[in-house]
Length: 288
Ligand SMILES: *[C@@H]1O[C@H](CO)[C@@H](O)[C@H](O)[C@H]1NC(C)=O
Ligand SMILES: *[C@@H]1O[C@H](CO)[C@@H](O)[C@H](O)[C@H]1NC(C)=O
Image 1 (cartoon, rainbow, N blue to C red):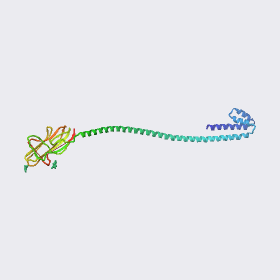
Image 2 (image 1 turned 180 degrees about the vertical axis):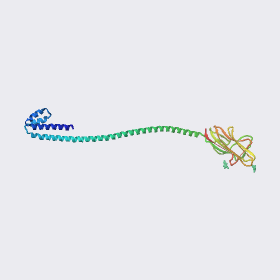
Image 3 (image 1 turned 120 degrees about the vertical axis):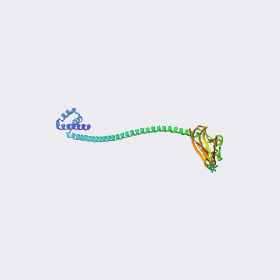
Image 4 (image 1 turned 45 degrees about the vertical axis):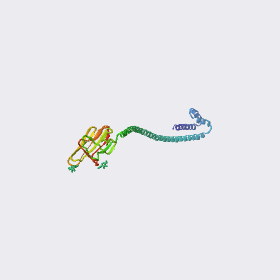
């Protein structure tokens, strides 16, 4: 815009000079002399040089220059307009880029946050894994220990019948009954030769027995013994010519080496046959 204004100013000066010289006629030289201090040196010298020539030759040059200047101004204006639109376009592009940039920045921030979250979760999972691993190996150790205990634990279970020989007794003393018919004797803790069960380990044991009698007007009586103690006594009297029987069961806490056995009391008898009616059974419930 400034260059356009300068051009216009120059045009005015030129026009004025031209008008003066035309109006002054003979005095043109004086006017030119007076204008010597101005910037129009070029025009002045041109006028001086062509003093002798006619004024009509000057006019077209100025118009041509004017036209040229006008063209230049138009060109400048067009260029300015073009530049302006280009700047506006660039500004628009910038706005778009800024929007995209801030959107990208937001996305980056979000991704950072997500990463942090994931990292936190991974760390938490790792910690949990460590805890679980510790628990797992502790459990594995316990399982190993239980396996060892189980392997060490004697497997004990027996069931025996007294005899096929019928009535046993009466005797003058308490007599340990030798149950000689072995149905089951896992762990061999029951000895059929002595009739004594020996606890192979400390624990809780279950024992059960059954007694049977057939003789008229007689008593049957046997007892379950733990070491030197009677635990229970089973007895019955056959006073009406039929059969008699009894049974009982106990859970006993035994130390390793404790003995359990059945005793036929002095003066009493007991009966068994191939029907397996007087029996003795036991097994370990669990170790202690
Ligand atoms: C037992 O007594 C009944 C009658 O009460 C009798 O029939 C039976 O033969 C007797 N048994 C023996 C073995 O004596
Ligand atoms: C008694 O036990 C023996 C095995 O010792 C068996 O052969 C027999 O059949 C049993 N008797 C009855 C009546 O179950």
